[in-house]
Length: 178
Image (tube, rainbow, N blue to C red; front, side, top):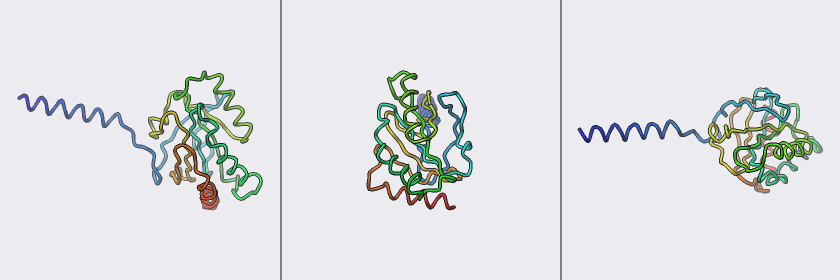
């Protein structure tokens, strides 16, 4: 009887642990949907940009400048060199508000400056939803490229190495032509 009780207890703990775990977003997976608001409380989803390849920057505000060189490179390829067709591409940011000590007002101010600099949309994940649903790391900066069908085609946690900049541009060019 003790063995049966122990086996049932062990099984219930294992099931609870497994159910509480989320799949980490990987290349080749379809990205689960989300809904977030911008600073004006307007709701957006990935489908707000249907038919576009998305570069999603999931950013802890404490490291918001980490990938500025990468974003500058992408911005130049799209806006100045016109190598990335902006009719089929959207770069955007989602602020991981849960991972910072900074107050929401300061976060919105920092995000507003980034939105102006990159002429983009910045959304706010106040509850760490993508940490749970996408397995995104806390206290980090993650770049995810999803194709028009919302399949993950590239993912970088932390600083994107400069050796990868042109590789990502070529991927974006290819994906926007599909």
